[in-house]
Amino acid sequence: MASHPTNLHFVLFPLMAQGHMIPMVDMARILAQRGAMVTIITSPVNASRFKSVVDRAFESGLKMKILELQLPLAEVGLPEGCENFDLLPSFAHIVNMVLAMNMLEEPAENMLKVLCPPPSCIISDGCFPWTNDVAKRLNIPRAVFYGPGCFAFLCIHIVTSTNILDEIDSDSEYFVMPGLPDRIEVTKRQASTWGRGDTIESTKVFERMVKAEKDVIGIVVNSFEELEPNYVEEFAKVKDKKVWCVGPVSLCNESFQDRAERGNKAAINAHECLKWLDSRAPGSVVYVCLGSLSYASTEQAIELGLGLESSNIPFLWFIRQTSEEFEEWLSKEGFEERIKGRGLMVRGWAPQILILSHQAIGGFVTHCGWNSTLEGISAGIPMVTWPHFAEQFLNERRSLEESKVILKSDDIKEAVKALMKNDEEGVARRKRCREFAVMAKRAMEEGGSSDRNMTSMVQAIIEELAKKPTPIQDIV
Ligand code: UDP
Image 1 (cartoon, rainbow, N blue to C red):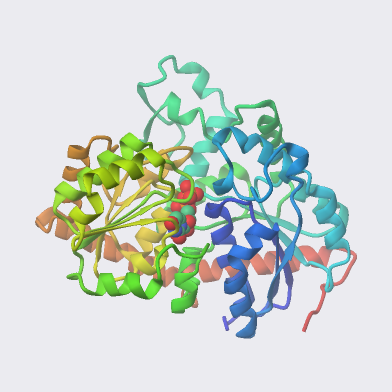
Image 2 (image 1 turned 60 degrees about the horizontal axis):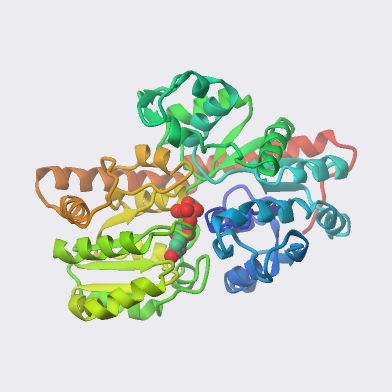
């Protein structure tokens, strides 16, 4: 257990998207390892994805549990079971999901009212601004968690709180983002998607999020100070809030099972996967996974497959969703036969952190979701970045490989070959990556920056509770 035990009761409300739920469940474990009681509130399908991990934590003595709240899917026109962004029939259904999540305010409040022991603090996703009103009514301090790191959030803050985009005429020309410690260029098209809604409903939620943020005791971020020191400082300054970087939270998963089952049931037997990797030379395999939401068109998937094949580099490629068309192409080409012995293609969920920590992995082709970026950094693996949407174009700037948008098979081949090269540049890059991995690990160790930030967050909650009429709940 950490050196600063606590007996507070945390209630966590993760957004129903893998890139938000997974780090929040990790955070729950880190808090529970300090002796806190942690209740995660989510919907049944999402609860089932984390059940084994949470049950195992509970059996090992950690006070962690999940409580279920039903999302009113039928009321917003979503099919049964569509309880996570990765289960939505299309991107167009995001707005229905936002509406359903917004309707959780009353049932969640009723649940919290009878929770025993009563919550000492709510940590909820920024996309659930209604938790702020619930927290206020029940007199519970609230901290907010967002998916991305401080760099991305500072950029989003600048774009949403100024009229900078109105001053830019061209959609595709790069401009320098003002107010940043470094010179960062983006296009108006990329920046237009950050922190803004494209429907009336989502715009309303964004406005409510900004308002709700004013009341929080602080902002919890899955990052570590050493990775983006200037941005942590600047982000705290512009928000006028405490910012606690408590990551990379993925590093709290130490056991084989927890790594193998993190986030969902893997589409490959973890032992088989490791066996395949064990048979490869250290640092020889490129791992390809584009996160939990991005979708590659059939044409793009074919280009990717051909690019990987022609690179002549061993690869482990996880495809989230395939299409009938792509499957037909695969069988017509005999693609899987052709790559046998050198490449492995798996349809479905990857045990990502288990894979990244294997010594055979020498490179990572990522879509630049913040979690994947941070997991690549924590594993000390160089990355080729292929941003798809939202703030991924920003995360790319913080990763350790030069930015590269890959489209054609030849480009993919060249990018992968460059990534895996062991020339002077490649060796220097690997060394830099390993240094960052060491920093990440240190941050999470006892006395490291993220450990100290967690202590500081707990302390802030205790101070906040002391100001309130009700005494701190003792759960021990
Ligand atoms: N992930 C995984 N297996 C997969 C796809 C994703 O374990 O097949 C995990 C990944 O390790 C990360 C999260 O899901 O923790 C995805 O979050 P990220 O921010 O990288 O991207 P998003 O999916 O939100 O676009």
